[in-house]
Length: 163
Image 1 (tube, rainbow, N blue to C red):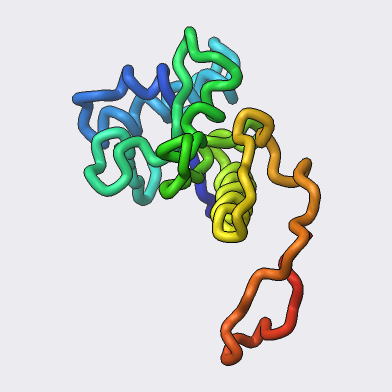
Image 2: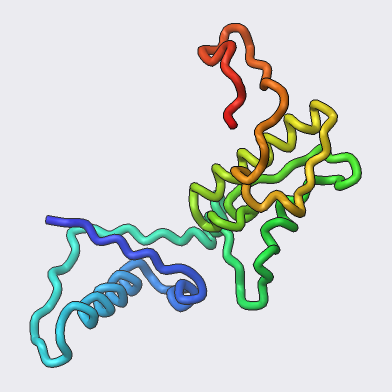
């Protein structure tokens, strides 16, 4: 009894477009068999009891689920995505794994960029400017000179902002 998870990302995932779930599972099992057994072996893999094939690139609720940087992308492109709008007087800030240099396609990138954006929002509210061209990693930033106000009903009341 076990579980097999196969994650196929672009550009390899494009080869499965238009195929039925059964065809995708069959190809994956064929690849797994080729990886696990020598070419002259007659053993076969057991048929799975169940299979779930997701298609995040065409799911209207995720449309890819995470960023993909194709050939020709620049290393610093995520910082361009993170730039606030308008740059002269920021009112809209961006976060997400696609805006992270260290955590692209990962939850850690989403968290890191969220911290960076939250710092920029709070700093803007306190009249500070935030240089996104040097904001690759939120943990490289010095701690803010002010405390983040919290509602009195918060269980975090009287705590200082994380550093």
